[in-house]
Amino acid sequence: ALLERDFTWLSVDRSEMQRLDAWLDRHPTEVDALLGVTGCVAAPVKMGKLGMDRGSKRNLGVAACIDIETTGLAPRTDAVVEVAVALFTYDRTSAEILGIHEIYSSLEQPRVPISSAASAVSSISNELCAGKSIDWDSVRRMIMQADLLVAHNAEFERRFLSPIPGLIDGK
Image (cartoon, rainbow, N blue to C red):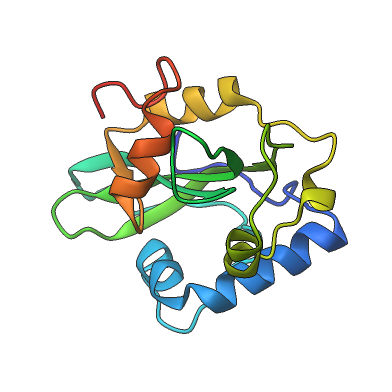
């Protein structure tokens, strides 16, 4: 019962919540597109049990919305410092988002320093990332469940994520 999962267990610490709130404030169009409801703020998913009318026949799909932050703009010299993935079910006919099933977000200490320009955009500092790492196996598992990937600046994401083996192959 993919559409009847309980998400009330999901929680984040105070600093992560502040960063999430700041990101949501900076990306209202993406939030509206993901949630399908103008003016709704989700932080993090407190949707309770999701469901739908059992009598309806819908053409359902699973998608992953992915966002990354990096140390700069050059994939060959810069690195991913944050990844966020939301796995959700949607109606392929109406494009209605029916429920968010899993969210993953993590920081990673980069191999190169975060540029001041990148930090100004993302609010992510070298200190914030110190000692942290992204669980790429979790990211890969979520992406493999999706038949569609969604990203605000997809070409940018693709340039940084493509070199990671098995992550977005064929997506």
